[in-house]
Length: 396
Image 1 (cartoon, helix red, strand yellow):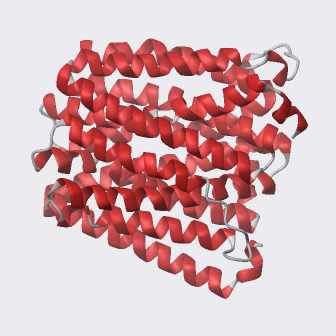
Image 2 (cartoon, rainbow, N blue to C red):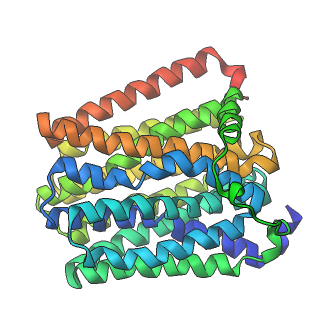
């Protein structure tokens, strides 16, 4: 902790990459969803395009985290930040749905591993500090406020190229912040062999074995729920708003305000005598699911804004506790692996929900699919609450 507090460059690197790395996802989701609509994609293919960014991280996040533990977090982040920066400018010059899906596959992996790196830095250097987890979440959500809003405004007033130029600028900022990190936070560089870059089966076994720790297992359950509802917001939430006649600026504002509220909510550090961390995660997740599920029942801006604020409050309350519990439960040498495991669960949820939503929309329509998927997620929240109530000591 002394090292973390004494190094301004490390703090700027952790908080700065938290601001830009993950906020690329909702920013890109607004722009990519509008781009897919402009290309004439059906709801199912919009779901495929949005979900494609989660496909490769679903298989390679654990390997990426292991590489950070083994080779150094800064080195791995630098490599993938450069690739992300090179690819975002290509989107508007490849106006085909198949090209969109292909680009989503690659940028989903490179951007995702950069965000894994930001979380790994927190785990390695802050070691479960709730205070620093709150500030990581605050900056993360500020970026998720500014990114979608900027993307929506530029889409309306500058067009496709301007919107994707903003994504490129976001990626450049991430790269510069990674470069700013001190080189000595990485272990000395060993001779690199090709086999070091190949995923190892035993690393995956060790990662999934972490779920034998009750707290880690619970974090993974909440991760799935949290990202499932986030997947709704970053996919067909945008499509629904566009269908009821809202422009890119209003869509970006609704998405952004949810993330703006999440930032201050993340700084609410309630003592355990008031509420146990596991119950705080559960209540936050339940609130996020509920408010997002109610979206298709409304069609005017201010009621939708109220739901967006409620969703953002729930998401902000649970994330710092989630980060802190996972970091404390895992040794320093396995922080990258544990974050990779959580990201794998993230990506499974991010892949499944848009695909299921796209398929269900084809059959029952957009509004009913929101309610159906939301009801399933809320059932998961209630079952988890019952299990925690019956086993209170397992998650202390």
